[in-house]
Length: 470
Image (cartoon, rainbow, N blue to C red; front, top):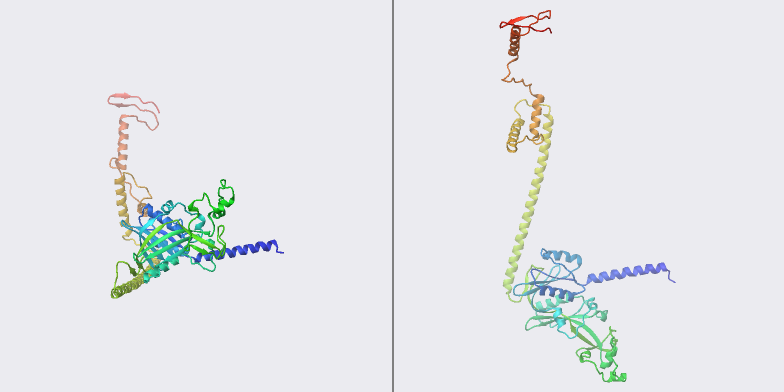
């Protein structure tokens, strides 16, 4: 018996192996981007959505395109995501164009969209349509018709269309995975390509309408029948659309059991197609090497002789050589500029070191003569005066630090200033003399004391004044 722990381990290993195989299978199939360039209308935008529906499930269903995006942006992200093909739609005032590009090195096929029909228009024109989400879980079956004609451009078109869809191994394919098909028909006379998208349905043949009705999930109404044999023999009350006429063109023998009642292996069944859209009528205009640049391999409107083609190739080769020479010369100029810059940097560093060494040696010696700081101080004074006149206020001390330093140096090292005497006040000697004169006059006209401190009477102007004792 198998232990529970071993069973869990085996389940994990099998799940990891299945995921690895699925990743390898998914990475091996081609993937595509369907987007537009430039201004397009609503109908072309809906056509892009319908074409993405055709390319499911190996396409970007919700790819967002902005105006600032360029083709290089899509090429840059295509590599990590495994995208192999671009379908680019664009619109001009007169035509609608489609580019089909193979990544990463081309070629690029340019088509003109002559006519197109959207899915909603195709479905609305049908009486009965079969389209559900399970049909889009697997890629469609590609059918090419009349692409065996002579011509290099026709073979290249056929190869490009074949590589857009995953290849099918006939021995291993499961018929239940084939639910859709894409038909491409080439008309050699008009050189137009018709694209159609169909839904597949397989029904058993060799049965009456009544038996087919019984095989369906919805059972018929037999309230008016007396016996079930009437339903099997007459098929009363059955519409003609429920039993389509089949022939040799669509009857085949199934190698496998197909989904649906009555579709057994080695039994005759009819394959029926129901169009689900979109439709497109394309015309090839030119084929170009690379993606957006390169030689023109084929052009439907312009034909050139071998000599003209050789001349174009020679001219392009000369342009490439000239471009390579310019690139080499530019690289040499960049190297020379870099070398000069490095040498200049080296010389500058040596000069700075030398200057610092000289400054350290002469740091103890001071020049008593005229110094450069005086000119700077004069300029700073002019700036202070200009600020005073412009603003009307005294500048802050931190605004002009050179003036502050200069004033501090003058206060600390400059000679002491002599005090200036005001012109209104007399000198000190004159003031002393004036005081003496005032004292003498006061002795004549005012109080007078003798040495003993007693008062004395003095006559002034014939009038006797009496002073009290102090």
